[in-house]
Image (cartoon, rainbow, N blue to C red; front, side, top):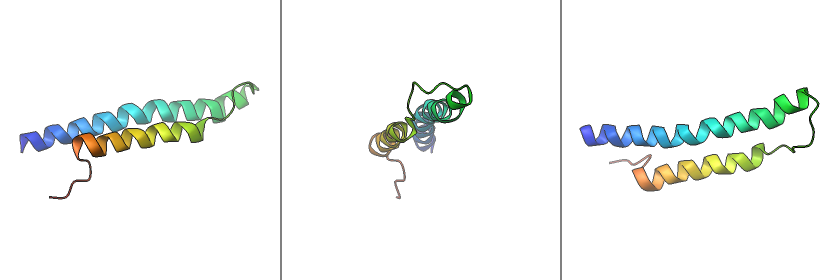
Length: 69
């Protein structure tokens, strides 16, 4: 049971360590910068979502995320 909990913790760590920077970057480029009338950086939220998808894919492959036994 301990190995299973360790695997779950590592999965959560990978997903959250990818999710927070992606969400922060998306919020900054889509909401904060236009509110400050800074338009030199384009909206990169759709590109950042690909990073999040790669992080989830990594958790699936490396730590057997969504593994049904």
